[in-house]
Length: 198
Image 1 (cartoon, rainbow, N blue to C red):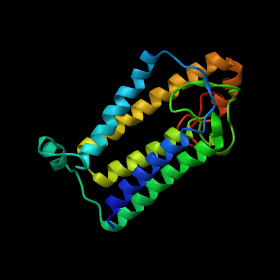
Image 2: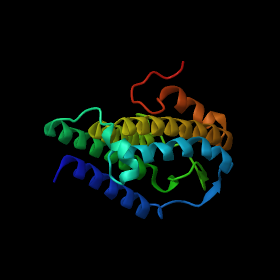
Image 3: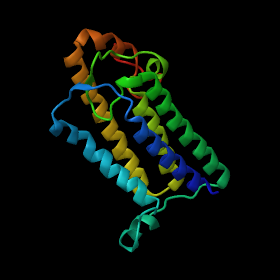
Image 4: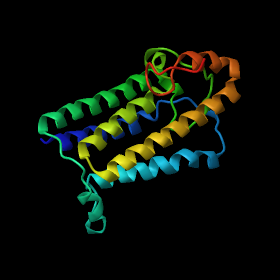
């Protein structure tokens, strides 16, 4: 098994497990307007396609340019370390998913009996699922070493940041600013130990 095969296998297993676990969720009570979701879905979706195209996974003859724009090739040992970082990122998302329990949703929403979770990985960052995904996305992009993959990872980072901001504005409006303000003031958004605003 090659490191890149292991990375793709980890991603595929994560996607499948995430889909299966989607049934474990409370009923949604409200969502922001769908048009607002385009602000994060477009860069995240385009970024995901570039990430995959840069690796040449689904790239046919029409996408040959994406494959030849490889900036580096890492030694096998470093590639395996990268696989470990990717696995750690995906494990971090699952820690957050289990901690969140049935309040999880793939979309920004307010669930029945919604509360702000502040335990587990939510003590480290306000959006640990996005943090874990970005760790895994960047690990794959570095492993692929393609310009398209790096651009894709950057777009996905922007998309997740936009989604986190939308989620925070929406939940502050739905749950009341007081329910979220203290948590936001002492816990970084996406990067653990990042200074928060005073």
